[in-house]
Length: 275
Image 1 (cartoon, rainbow, N blue to C red):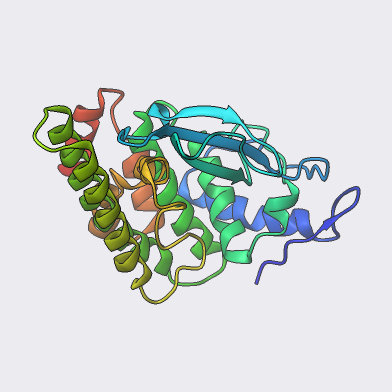
Image 2: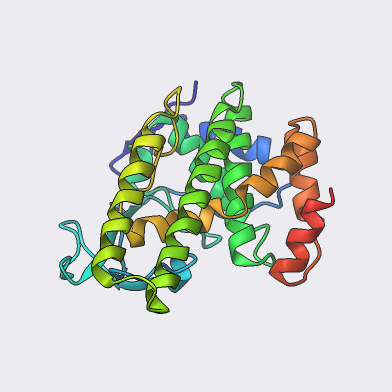
């Protein structure tokens, strides 16, 4: 069991050793060292961001969402005009990311996933963004589970979420495309949108057992929440199959990902599909 506590001036006794347990697993999997999480910064509670988009617009990922800085109270955007997702971020990969208050206060399983997720981002910056997010998500689950000496159940559960969310993303995208072409009215589009999001929420809520390091469904049931999570889920099923074909071995999976060519998103996806 890893215990995560922050003292007022930085790490509590033993915490550096506990984080190093994760770093040791990362090294055995083939990660190059990073400067992330080498220090605690109790002055940083979290990073607050407001992602938003139009009511009938569904960008493919968070890169297509509009962004404003938020604060502890949330966002000042008009939610009658926009679909908004307020994100209280625990860590941002920078190569020197500190342990924030929110990261230190998260559950053991969440912390054990976030640290290698962010560290793996530094390993795969050359990959196309959406593939890199899926890769960091998968390897985060696997590395955290290995450090806790537990089965990587959340990696399996996230595969279920990803298949489901991707299906609904495609369906809602098709509805918006029909609306732009004049095939259905804006009112009918809004009604179909709500029906799909409601059904997605019900299906996601049925994922069992309950994941321990991620939310079963979208962070908020609107276009912004769905687009944001699609950043992580679009290519997750593809990367998950690489993991399965590696016999669910962490190092094999990591090495296959790190060996990917520096090419376009389509070509890199084709590389993984062929493994």
